[in-house]
Image (cartoon, rainbow over all chains, first blue to last red; front, top):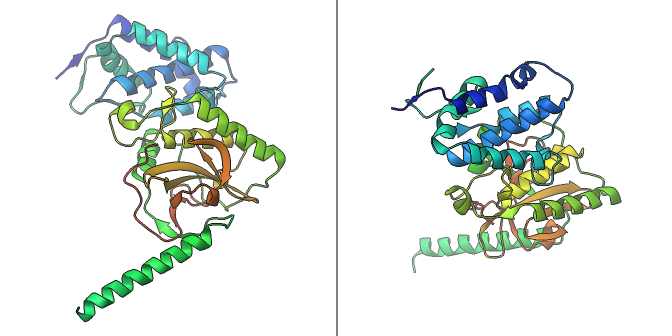
Amino acid sequence: MPLRRPSLIHCFAWATLTCLGVASAWAEDAAPDATKVAAAVQVMADLTLIDSACHGEAVNFGIALGFLARQGVSTTSVLPGGSERAAFEHDVQTRRASFDHDALCGEIADNYAEALPGSVTLPTGTIRGR
Amino acid sequence: MSGSHWQGWTAALVALVLSCGLAAAQAGTPFMQTTGITSVPYGWVDFCNRYAGECDGPTLVPVTIPPTAATLRDLDQVNRSVNSSVTSVTDMEHWGVVDRWDYPLDGKGDCEDYVLMKRKVLMDRGLPRQALLVTVVKDHAGEGHAVLTVKTGKGDLVLDNMTDKVMRWDETGYRFIKRQSGEDQNRWVSIGTPEPGPLFTAK
């Protein structure tokens, strides 16, 4: 069974959720804030990557959509033609290039499962390494 | 030929006549006739599981949208823009499965993904959910297909990824099988004579 250890990439993903203020935004009804919107879009990009690349993990996009909504961003803004689409596509491309498959489906998926409960369901039998 | 054999043929003939009669009656009428609750497509259930919250909401009073020039322009614009902004791929090519309903986050999708996006965009623009109904049909080749039905005072209009033209339902040439009910998006109703739905929608 895979033992997932923290890594630089894991810490980077963790920073996405904490240092950028997304985790706190989740608990607050804050006014739209460019940084938090960017972070929420980044979360959506990560979950999209996990969904497309990882066969074991089950992604629930509803969590991320709720996240976007809390930043005052509608679901359609990240869909083709939406106002955040360019940022979303940029995040998907850059993060696809910077994450390798094992990290994405390991540490990063792990991180989301913990930081945003319900967003990613890990395969049965996975042991966390933290 | 035995009596029971004749009875079987007679029953089949009556069913065929009734079926054709209802289909003929529906063609040329602006509004679909629904004929009772039916099964919910697996794709919708799966979508609701993966997009928690998107399928929630109370039971609502069904509405039709006033067919103002602005609304019709909106429908036309959304149909065209979504058709052109999403790249058409089958679920098998995309996900390796026969049917998966999704918002086209990666810019790719098939018929039901276009439908879900159009529905979402139109709801964002203020149109009521009760008038925007995901609908399963059989296309001209008899294959499963999904379109968005918009209930307007002018009739049931169809937004379809196979055409940029918004048409009244009875002008499409499709055989309409089932759609969401106006009251509850998680209840589906048969259209016309109930018949088995397609196993999947894949255009």
